[in-house]
Length: 141
Length: 44
Image 1 (spheres, one colour):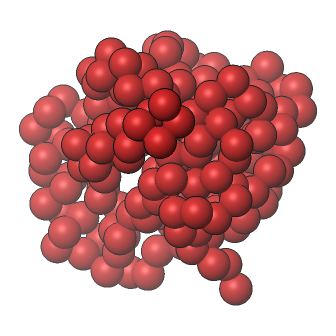
Image 2: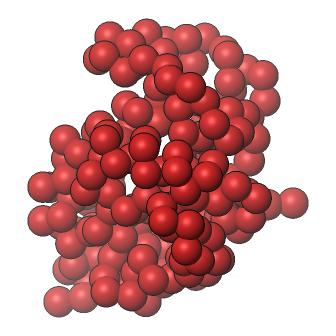
């Protein structure tokens, strides 16, 4: 449900994100058919990719969560928030133990913003992403 | 041991798959400009 919630937020904020100069992409764990079915309906404006081996996750410093990061009080609160916004859990594919992350990468391949989930359902603040993107535009001008 | 990336670090380029099952180099994502790249916990 947290991934559905995040993709919905990307769709909701896509105009602001694109205005800030960002294209949108997401990597999930599973098979290509899962990306087609999952992202195609939830986030048609996002380029969805798959990585079943977790090689990309490891390369970007992402890890599996510990128990409290996966089922602790913060996760329960985040779950209530997500359900309250209509995002329910579907059939899970891949690795539900993995924690996510969000990165802004510039046109030269340099990381300009990095946010790692501290627990399942921990999403970055969009204002922080937009700030990083706008700083990037200013530095490129 | 996986190391968290920080602003200023080069973004790793790895080859994964696109939604059609074709090989895709991640660096293609920023070839035409900045990208917001999200890693999802899973599909579900």
